[in-house]
Length: 529
Image: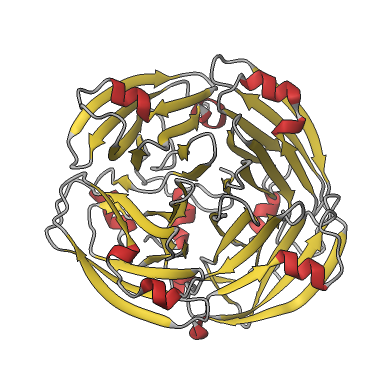
């Protein structure tokens, strides 16, 4: 893990001093576990955003399909020079191989992007998607093979466990972890774990994995290695922290749960366990009393049988804080103000859940009016942990699908330098199968926030470089929710394929998430790029 301050510098974050001695990023990559079975398949989705956001006229792609054992099966090399939607299909890659059984595959796709201009990020904005007609589940780029020794040393400056996701252990629901190893073999892979159940009780232990080959795809279910997991969770959701000895690649794991009865999955990515991170670089100094210490906005789906939950994992640096909640309608009108809603002390190491359906009912608020929740942290001193991670679960009660989405995201630190930024740019995929919904929130850590936002939305499709535009205005603390089913012109424009939407705003405080709702009750989701 690199320090948060190094992270800001490497991103060229607004207001941060740029290190002009820093090596430019000319290779950006991601490596993904991919699956094809008789129920669903995998694909990598992306927009040619380099042309739009970075004004880079072209980038080169090297796509490598490897077997479970890390053997190269096929490679594709091509150039991206258009702002359109692209798909790397596992099915199409498998058709180019000589393997006999193309209907049952576990392996990896590595995507390497090369440029003669600085791409800033060593990880590209790609989306891994597992899908069929009844569900899909998606997450942005996670694991990657380091570019060089500088990249490795920078990201392994602090070695911390991975955590921050939901696990189940029932007959029908089983938690899993998957990753693709880097170029170094691991003859003695060891995982030490600590599980937290719904009562915040702990279960610790360890297990070993077989010899891991270079570029091998590793996939396992936790129940296969933790015999008393089901008994300990007792039918409820829990969380797990994983300490490992993996080296040579960025260990951001693909994690989630499988539903056997629907033959589906819901996944996200793991995140840093910062409970042991107490160095001065692990904290942010409060810079302004006109800003909250940190805050983040989330959309609420609480009517028509849907539920929304906020999960607080026991993973933050040593600290204590009060959590405030403000509920708003889509026009930014305040519906409910709950100061000091919850007191949190990292020493207690609790797994906490806020159910917004119950919160609305308790306070007699019509779910149809509640659009967003503003989650605010107030720390007891001026030292604020730099990484405050939450989980956002959206699902449907009583449906065939028993798994909600589980989106990993951070609270945004109160940084007055951001106020001077002229605008912001975000993007995400739109799915033609299911019902794609994108939530844009105009929300800030600024206290008494009052700035409206004007967004130019541009829609891109796969078959050509044509695009469509819509302009929207979002009031302060308000939300604009784009529903594909209600926009027949855009749905027809996408022509049955995955498209992309970009949002160019005249305001730096735009946040957002994208979802895909299926008739089975399955929900896919992630935060915007």
